[in-house]
Image 1 (cartoon, helix red, strand yellow):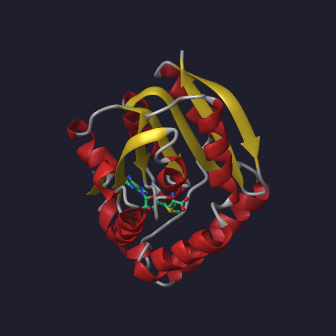
Image 2: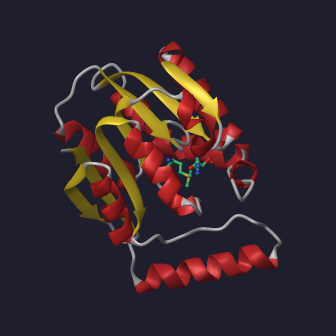
Length: 213
Ligand SMILES: C[S@@+](CC[C@H](N)C(=O)[O-])C[C@H]1O[C@@H](n2cnc3c(N)ncnc32)[C@H](O)[C@@H]1O
């Protein structure tokens, strides 16, 4: 890996961010873009399937789907703080044993991870420079569907990210955010045998559901 991505991401998403995210989730429910992922998964009408949640943060997706759509999950995350908070919440809810928590860059450990029925990446590829490697690995691990959210490729978000990245550079913080080309995401998923069957947009985020053809 040409960057120490896991280390950079690990320091970016620390315990205060993770605890703040959990507090918001417990108060207001899943974030808007996560709701789009949940609706897309429910539209597949699957029951008791497996989930691979890459960069799942505090685990909102499996907290919402456990004991209904999914019966087990693997959560691979570059942030140890997110994993800790996600595990504590899963323990409280009584299903921590059904979830495997792995602290890693998914592209580094993908060979040791079994395929799952559904693979999710909620606001993950925008934190990762080598999105092709990450998406390819995600597609190769999905038996039925890949659902992801990413920033819309429009001028205002590109400007916002430039400003954010400029201040990151000034602060000597190596973490960067990315708007990856949506057409290339589409092409990569097609090459791996997936077809986009749903696509919804919010002001900043876009959700795409890819099903295996
Ligand atoms: C903006 S946060 C989103 C967290 C959660 N999905 C949500 O929407 O609340 C990005 C997440 O992606 C994770 N991440 C980024 N690149 C990753 C990679 N290559 N492998 C595993 N996790 C990654 C980060 O650690 C972090 O948990």
